[in-house]
Image (tube, rainbow, N blue to C red):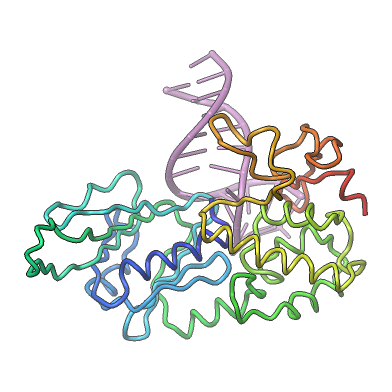
Length: 284
DNA sequence: ACCCTATGACTAG
DNA sequence: TAGTCCTAGGGTT
């Protein structure tokens, strides 16, 4: 489920779990040969830019992770006295905190849980130098979740491109971190036709979408899920059985009635990705 | 036990 | 633009 919010959330969690001490890094499946380079090394912190996650280690090394379409992290809490759980499935990388266990306070606690994360199914997991981290970041557009991001870089590209805005929003060189869900939802909330060329976008429209992405994706980081429905529209069909409330306006709602205007939500392939939109609300 | 799909991105042509 | 790679869940046999 990885759009940018997922990676920023992971960066936040992994920093909390691992920063400030050495960690054990292993490769239970044998496919992450480089783990020996960072195993036992001091974990400084984790960062995310767009859909890329970086584990920064002392000595100018980083592990660069991209989850691709399927990758995810399993997080385990391990009581100090317990062994970490056996890896399940095709685990490419396991990172575990090294705890210098201290129960001198005699408070009867069994101990603080330590954390182990298992990485499965990533499209990328490699050790690189910090200079290469910069290279990766330089290839990306501004990230709405980066407080220092410069949206003008994105606007400069959009305004001179004839590609549809629906495709431009998904292009990581234009904007970093926006995936298929945020693309569809932010266009709906802005009332913009996904097929409109970048050259026909007005600056104020882009501004509004950027600001909306900043807000929506921050919610995603905090909650771990993409919720885009305004309070006044928070009723109607559920995204799947067992879900407690609706989440989105158009994503995977093709054939259903628009929550705002009642028109039938449409689906179409745009540049090899499935695009969802409302022909009623996004007429221009 | 299959078959399909999926919030991604790369490569070849 | 098509093909490729990785995993998992849901649906269908």
